[in-house]
Amino acid sequence: MDHRHQQPNILMLTVDALRADRTSLHGYDRPTTPTLERLAKTAVVCENAFSMATFTQAASAQMFTSSRPLSYGGYDYGAEGRPETVFKRFHDAGYKTTCLTTLHWVNRFFGYDEGIDEEIQTFGLNSLPGVALAMIRNTLLEFEKGNINDGELLGKVDPVLLRFFDNTSVYCDLILERGDEIDRDFPDSALVNSRYDFAKIKAAIGRHRQEYQAGKIAYIRRHLIPTPVGKEWMNRWLVREWRYCRKPSRLIAELFFRAGNLLLGWVNAKWARARQNRFKIYPDAHSLADKVIGLLEQRDKTKPFFIWTHFMDTHHPYVSGPGRKWYRHTPRLLEALGYSPDIDPSLSFDGKPKRKQDGDAFSALYDCAVRSTDDEIGRIVDAVERLGLRDDTLIIVAGDHGEELGDHGDFGHYFLHYTHNTRVPMVFSHPKIGKTRLDGLFTIADMPPTVAALAGVDPAPDWEGLAVTEPGGGDRDHVLLETFYGGNCLFDHRPLYFAVRTKDHLYCWREYKDPADKFSPDGPELFNIRDDPSETHNLYRPDHQLISRFNALIAERMAEIPEITDQRIIDCFGDIGRDAVAAGCKRDQAIGK
Image 1 (cartoon, rainbow, N blue to C red):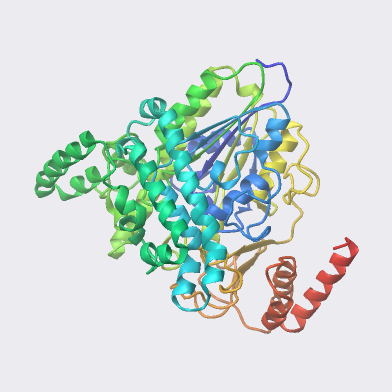
Image 2: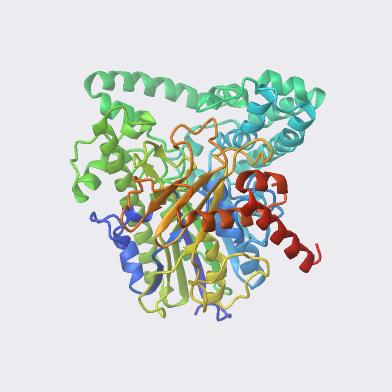
């Protein structure tokens, strides 16, 4: 090794919205993931790995603090108040920890900074108000309906807005500090090409902070009521104001670009729309791979490294290929995967398919994004080998959650616990690991303890996951999935969504149907996965032999969550709920609570 310690280097690569059944690693009939197949030759591959929630905010707590989504008050505040992060654990074990944060949910603003030696933020400015609104949207909606009073509103909203003002100001300072580096490394990203004047942005933040402090309820009513839903927030609040806080050269260039694109649209509307979206919302996989390779080449050779980044090309809208002309690469990828190269590469910017054939095209474009991301991961693996680091480096690749591609009527990842939304690849690769396929039930909360075990680092004492390579790591007979229907964790005003996943069955239980949920049927769902892998034939009936056991598992989990009252559990499950509450009380007494 090229460092004085004997721990392996750690390269953790996570991929957004990567569903296992669309990877050739897990048997998909199109060659979407040749790099993962290559890594699998010297890897532990978990055949049945699940995210316990279906969106990144809740998945991140699992991947980095080995804890469950609704533990510790819920997922609203990231790692804050949760167990030690994997970054902190490895930093304390002597590693140089670097986080290349494309992800607005995993950064210093959400408690992930402790133990990170170098944090490189690459997400765009508009992510910050988007995140803030996601954390308070349901509270605002309940306030609008009159279901919560001013005090309850401020109890949830006040800390979020104060943090937002502070964090956005700090973000501006960080971007100003690393501006030249970001311009060089991510020239085709929206972050760079928005060309904001961050001094003006900071001034705007200061004005809004003062206005808020002068009258908090009045500020909320003026700027945030009615509650922005969908993409409305992109034309509301600070986003609308700082749209013009840009460098004059950027505004002029955009005017000329739009004029030229208008002319192109008369000739080829498809290419004009793709060109309009030339700057990806997030840094693309190619730029990230270049940056990771640069970090490897410039590594500190006196200590092992822990590098993490997160690829976003597989997140909707599905964009494949490098740079601002990414859409010119899409036909090649389509053809390589057996699709027509004539599919419109800009189609997924519609948000939802408008016609049946558009749904098929969305699916094809998703596959292209998976393949192009896999290709970029392959370039990183090549660099690890070229630099002579492969024998000393543990490479982890995993999805944070899955994706729906029309399977149950929707597109994206909208908080329902069907397998396409929760089952992900999870691969731990090192040359000293023989080709191993584990058929047990695992979760992405198992990632931190597994990485620690393979690196010879002690796990944090309160991590909830299990090392998949250790005895008993694959002995679960079920995985419990839990969330709200998106939005923030407003325990007292929102229905709970749970599911039980076994090898053979999936049971989806909803306390009641969230008003925002347009796709779930009324009532529970039970699927036999062996006979019905698409999960379309609901076997649920109250007297089914599995239901009592599955309800008991959910009730017992609810009894562990302080925000859920005993009476609520009993109201949901009757005698089963009473038994769960009683068992929870006995457990608390035994441990001295």
